[in-house]
Length: 216
Ligand SMILES: C[S@@+](CC[C@H](N)C(=O)[O-])C[C@H]1O[C@@H](n2cnc3c(N)ncnc32)[C@H](O)[C@@H]1O
Image 1 (tube, helix red, strand yellow):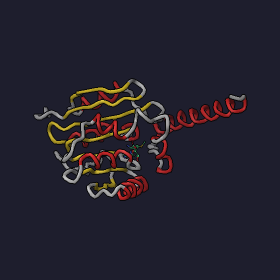
Image 2: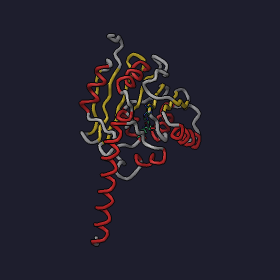
Image 3: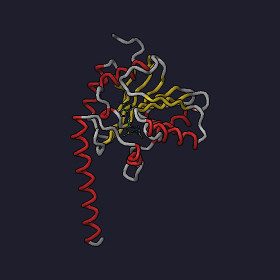
Image 4: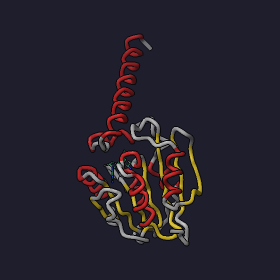
């Protein structure tokens, strides 16, 4: 590789790293959700094999006929995979705080010929989700963007059927990355029970089950 190329690559990496660090810092002061035009960030060669939608759907144990919540669905990359998996007898609710993200998810679902996806414009923590409705909930690189994380997780936990499963995925270059111990603490504080972990500290999925008889 010639020197000029190496220098450009290092510069690019340095700039990206600085933007991510600045973003993480600013988001502590003010919610800064991933803008719709940056939704491609989760679909690049570096995330292939560790963050792919089929892998996340498999880790969440999504099966035909299930009702699934894709909380913070973004541009719908996981929504479409989940909707294909649950099939005609199942349903996916794709929820996001940003209309522009939902528009992308809607277009993607339409292109895939799906009619089992419902779209919901809402902020997690506002209490708009129905209770005891979903078999599975997905929260993929979203948790750190929610200003009141406990209220957000409480709402998701309440929306799960007893015995339902919440699958949380986090990835380290994400400026809103949440370490697994913080995720565990939050999930336990809303009454969810850890069942399984996949991956490593940098990119992981952790599953939690809603107890059949919840202790209030
Ligand atoms: C990094 S993107 C991840 C999108 C998608 N889960 C994926 O893996 O492709 C985070 C998404 O969470 C959404 N989000 C952030 N805060 C939210 C909130 N309080 N309620 C609902 N969605 C939220 C953002 O609008 C954004 O679409």
